[in-house]
Length: 295
Ligand code: 13P
Ligand code: SF4
Image (cartoon, rainbow, N blue to C red):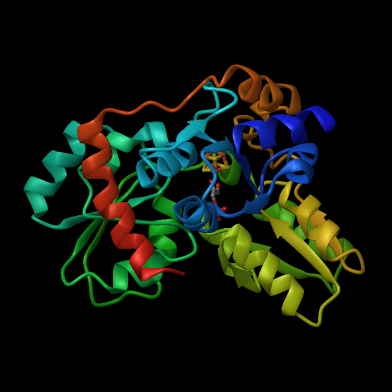
C-alpha cells in the first residue's frame, strides 16, 4: 500500500476502478463506479496518469476522452467478450440497409465507437435512445436492447445479437432459489440479464443505480443479479444491510487486474492504452454526445 501511494504521488496518478473489480483493487482506488460514472470521472480529472482497473473498452473510453493523458491498463488481456462481438463491416452494412443511426453501448471497441452516432451505458440507454429522432441500430447487447424496447415504443430498434456471458449465466432459477431463502429481499438486476430475470426484479439498473437504490430503499436485504463483486462495494458502504450475490456470476476478464499488476504498471508506465489519432477523433464525438445527455 505504501509503495502504491508513493508511486501514485510521483506519477500524479489516479486509480479508477469498476464495481466488478477485486475487493483489494476497490480498496486502493480513488474512485469506484459504473461505466458512466467512470467516464465522467475520467473527463474531469486533473491527474496526469489514469490507471484504469476494469476492461478494455472502459480504459479506451478514458483515453478517447483524454487523448493527452497517459492511461495505464494493468492487464492488456482484460478484454470484454461482448465488446468483441461486433465487427465494423457488418455494422456499416446494417446502417446502409436501414438508414438508421447507430447507438453503441459503451461496451464496444474504439473502432466501433468511431462509426457510431452516439454511445450509451446501462445507466442512460433508455434516455439516449429516446433522444434519437429516428429508428436506431443498437449494438451489441441484445438483452439491454430488449429492456430499452419496453420503454421506447415509438421507434424501430434493430438489435445486434450480442450478449454478456456472465449475465447470461445468471438463471432465473438461481434468483428464485435465493428469493425462497430470503423472502424479504428485494431483487436488483442488471439490464444485461435475460428477460425472465428482468421480469421478476424489483429494480433494474446499472451497477451504480443498484448501489443508489439499495442505499435509498427501506429494505435491508437484496438479491443482486449481476457480477458478484458489486456486493463487496454494497456491503462496505451499507454494513447494516445484507446482499446476496449469485455465486457463479463472475466476470473472468474483470478479475485479471491484480494489485501487483497495478503497482507494476505505475513503476514501468506500461501497458499504456494507445489508439490511432483518427479513431480517437471519431470515437470522441459519440462519447461526448452521450456525456452531454448524462445519467
Ligand atoms: P455498468 O455500466 O452498469 O457498471 O455495467 C458495465 C458492465 O460491463 C456490465 O457488465
Ligand atoms: Fe463484459 Fe460482461 Fe464482463 Fe461486463 S460483465 S465486462 S459485459 S463480460
